[in-house]
Length: 197
Image 1: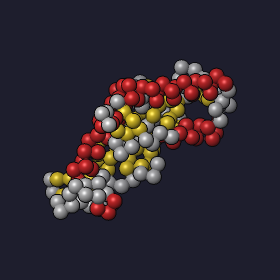
Image 2: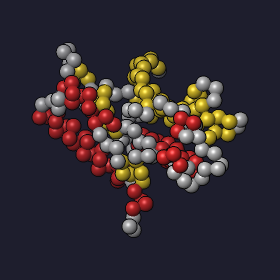
Image 3: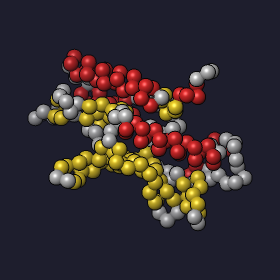
């Protein structure tokens, strides 16, 4: 996406090959100032003089920190409920001397659903039905298991893992798996706030 960079690596660990995706923010999320972290200049640095307002189209500091906390909660819960690829790490890493970037490390899938459709179409009828059923189950489980509504569901935020035959075509077997990614709280929210309205 436009806000992240993703690189895929492979490593042998514990006697097995693990493919993992490292997703880092394009822009730093925090600036390090002595012992505290504040929002970075990349997204209009907020100071104590800017509070509870949307100046320069950015969130106020408290709202930004709340969104940051909720994003982590979303990613961890999606992992626990089996709706996302396995999550190995969610946190912030140093970028240069003065900044922190968001970083997630998760199980790598072959590609996103948009790339799959572009390359292979939807496959035969059995594959089409499998894709539809897996998507239906994910969309059904999201509100049930996570009490969550996501407003940025699209093929690019849906990933697919599959084995390939000798010609490189996807094989429909137990390893043909679809999951959702990008659980950031700017687009994925607990829907409890809608109750009673």
